[in-house]
Image (cartoon, rainbow, N blue to C red; front, side, top):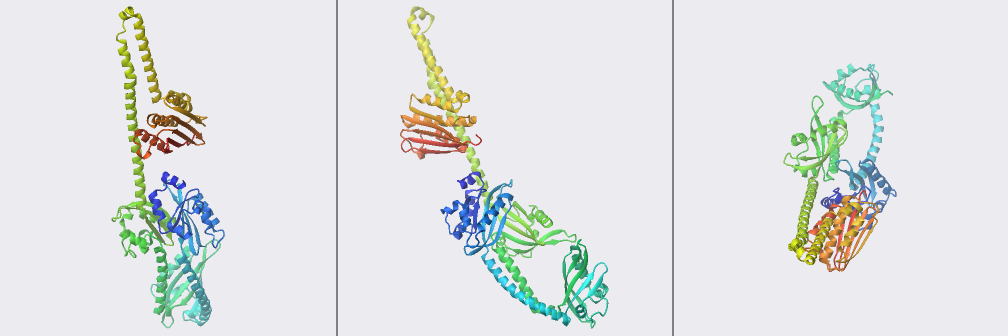
Length: 627
């Protein structure tokens, strides 16, 4: 019933549910009151469940399946769900060991255009392969740490040997202090001279001092660390590569006081192709790891690096990495290294480029749905932009199928409205024909009989044969009385004044009395202590009237029961007879009357059940919102 409510409200469509259930990922779709609406096939398989499993009726039972190694994991998941409901923002629980696999648990709210919560996507993202890679990475890191410790011991010995040195620069006085190792690194005996910035400029390779000054200025401005390589000349004119790393020392107020750095002679490394190859391999491994993460999803993902002009304004983005999903979506495998706006110029008129600039400037993620009619796509997409360090991560998900499904739902709803309108017109025409027939066959014939009967009645006959005149007059009076009664009956059928004056209960009882000569009726009305809305009372009256007319005309019944019961915010109408019954699938004899009845029930968001095997039993349930 919960799922049907979501489908009827338009929050979920049947086609969307079918797509979700067959996605090759582990999802639960949860309602705003944490009820399970549906699950993907993969989720059921991972949890060892089926669509008929009793656990699916209770979220707590499903979450208890998570507690294979962490006893309180289900409590943490439930708490995260509560936070999603409270904030409308996603919540993620990092790697958890569930049923022999590692999963990242992601709770994502789905909002409508008014940012109202529709439902929650509870996803188990299988990261077992990544976790195993992390275990392997930690093992290697321990080995690297061991090597680093050994290297630290070696560095101390190297400092003594003269290949490493340290220094300090006081920013206000520009006073520089060298360690003994720093003097030796530059080819001098410790304390041989007072170091100055002018001395460093003199021994530097042309242009290097200007580059180094720029790097240090940026570090001072940002109160951060720095790293640079300076080429210097030893006293014997030999050129060496000196790698320096340092940081800006600040006071408690955040003002920069000095620079503290360590320098190392890396000339041999610079000349070693083996070191360069190793560095390149490590870079390739990092890129491969990031690429594997990108390729683990079907969503189009790209890593973009901004291209800035002389005024530091972003002009475009260089495509650094793309996922397989984006390659498949665009049909291109040559995007890496290209310029994003140059390859997809439609992002500017579509407004996406401005959003990307906004994210880079504010650092806040942005999400947007848009139609993209450029470069031959002509499809709907949902995009997310997130700033990562100095780069931009962009995701694009094709939601064309979802949008088309929503459009089809709107078309269906419009068609339903049209059918209701047509049925209303047909009902009016049928009612007019019925009234015309009643006037012609009932009142018309009575009035015609009066006319015929009054022809011989004149003053001469009254004098000649008073007794015959009196009989003719009495007969005419009787026919006129019948005509008046017939007019009242038709008027009551069209607009029962008793309904407005005395309410639904008295009107239904009076209606039953009108049919009593033709059938034995038992009429019962329960719970109507207060008046209902006028449109509901009139609708219920017309439904009962239509059902009673059908019983009298078609059922060949001798007895019938009519019950109207109000309980809480619901109203039940029961009409049952002992007649011949009928086949609802072949209800031609009901015709327009049944169609009108069904339309009225549907428009009031009610339900109708017809049992017609032995006799006929019609049960109508109507919600009474606000009553």
